[in-house]
Length: 216
Image (tube, rainbow, N blue to C red; front, side):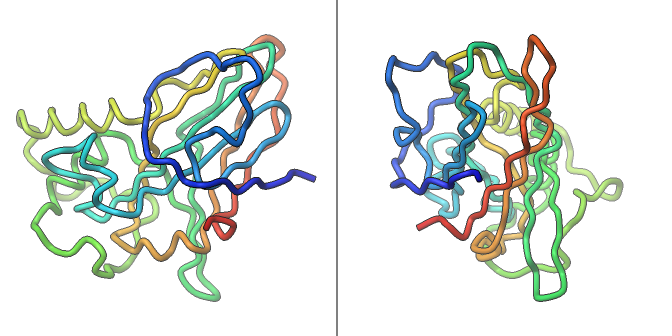
């Protein structure tokens, strides 16, 4: 049985792969929800307040368009690197008793497109429907001018920097989901992280299914 650890939230974000100090424990991860098995620890800190975005997005923010970022930390205590497929991460949300949706992650381009189309100063917590699944393609596109490029780069710089976590090191960054401002859906959400494997042997590591109900 995997054991879910709940730890206090610590404000801060360092987007970098870094070696672990000798004896460093999982409880030191800068997250509110932590799950661990097979030498891998994944922590999740949902950014559900506008103020959390200011240091990374001083002008426009993903949150202004109803997009919520999860600050994800992946820690590898194994003697070999671990590879994961970031594009297969999913957020499972329960819309009502009979309707559950599986949301795909957004790329930096997706976030920039969405923010430039929706950025209109309205309350980002206002309920919008239907919730998109997957991120819609086609239709109107914003002008990809200098402002779009600048914002896209900010999104990319804040995102997970790599698909590989080295031996005895950690990596952290943002993963984006379009919740249309319905932040309350995170209360019953689950983060599904499949498709992890060891670099040298290509052996699969069991998927992570992280239940947000355990967060404080």
